[in-house]
Image (tube, rainbow, N blue to C red):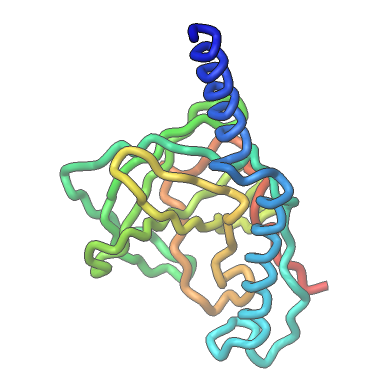
Length: 202
């Protein structure tokens, strides 16, 4: 009886480890396929939508880093209870008003990092969190004005951050758009080699 219990516990531990390594039950190849499929859907939208910045212009496709599960992390959410607001500068010299919602604290490539999470004023209780960030790839292989992440708050303590889903603002494709710039809290001292790269017209 005791051997059976030990065996069951051992199997359970192995299963938990395997589950965590595969990223919530999704293996590496399945994850890669899902990310690539999402990118294809975005490109189809940009080719066909009336709201696309490429409407009436040539579209050469987007450029990405290869999907990498190392850039998908779980972050601790540190809520900001004071309901502070901030004016975020935009690429055309304007400002947009955001609620400073929380900080996301996480480990990536051996470094402890922290990003400010924002909510657009007027969005009510929507669970979508916006953040703009810059990193050591900015102006090199990625857009100099920073990249964006749309994050979904699933509980009050943790949030998933997948930098493979980092995307460029429309300003990278057409400078006539107005795009919020990363707050200074989100200039990360690390190269985030994941997600979308610079858009090239050649």
